[in-house]
Image (cartoon, rainbow, N blue to C red; front, top):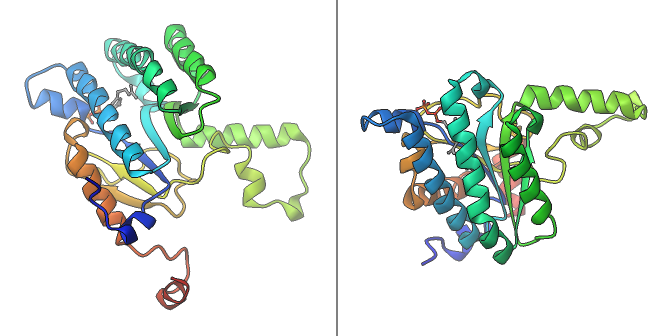
Length: 246
Ligand code: FPP
């Protein structure tokens, strides 16, 4: 059943980006190893992706591994990479059936070769899919993305400083084919962006849930969307200006 009224449906975000935090704490609170939390986190990825598709939210981006996560213990990192590979292999069939296109942002060269291969193959195989868009941030860092964009602009040798605008810059970001996120959700009660889509989030609404990622279920996701659709996004304008066009 669609939990949104027709009016609320019109206001649903086009792009939701999620910082999936708290897998480790969730597992440790149950006396389990951290990887148990990541495994349950993957199950939750499936649930949230299905809910977003069902509601007609066309873009979801998930912060699956940050550049800073590279400093985690080797066993945790390799466990996470194996979960990623397993997820991509298991989901390929349904991604093709449901028209889901996979993209990745981040420095894939910093992933173990087997994980990089699984990501690149899935990106290639789903390239023609047009119905829905899943982006994984893998070995991603927003500051590093900005540095790469600046290098790419310098190399392009096509800069007219007086006329240079945000759109000229954003074309060099890895997110160039994605709309800016409308809503950024972070689980586990932490109020920070942790080097995730810093520039793209300029006008994003932010929702922080106290739940750890494995327990951020369909109901909690819908709750965050309900909160979002009742916010007023003013993009620097006044309430009166916004009210006069809606
Ligand atoms: C944060 O929890 C989560 C991560 C660093 C990894 C997120 C990855 C997944 C959910 C699985 C892989 C994703 C896909 C798409 C297959 P944390 O470990 O930082 O938790 P803590 O803050 O409680 O320690």
